[in-house]
Image (cartoon, rainbow, N blue to C red; front, side, top):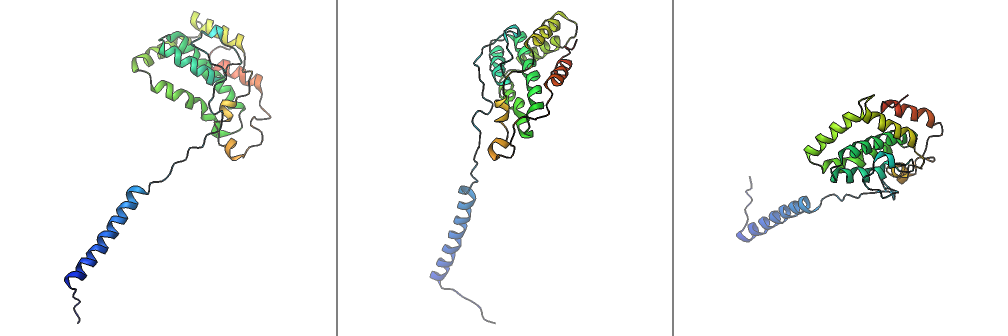
Length: 202
């Protein structure tokens, strides 16, 4: 049996090779991080009107949920929670309508994407008080509910192209859907469904 031996300098060279290899592996692990590329279509979640904290009586059917989200945020900042609650239901009503007519399934997450950064920055106390105002609006037959329902019926269904939502979906980027809106969408039927969910149906 032959026993391999190395001189002092040969041992130094071998150790240097192993140390260099170890350093290279560590460097790869530390510095070779994956690159994250965020692709976002122009107009994604973009408002078309810059509105402040408005009462529901001043809302229009040209205002999108993206517009109303600005108003909702400002109402919370001003602690105008009654108007914040009305604005929240406006967003949900119009968002529900838009989700039913937009073809791209991935775009339907737009309402959550609009609201999450707003509510995430609000104190638990303000959110709790806002929830109390939301409960008042859903109390069918109350003066508050009746006033809100009267206004939302007056405003009527959306009268805009939901670009804020269409541009939020992947189909715009991939070009996988030719028509952004569903051809068989029944706006009259859907608006009646929205009013029923708000407990505003006659």
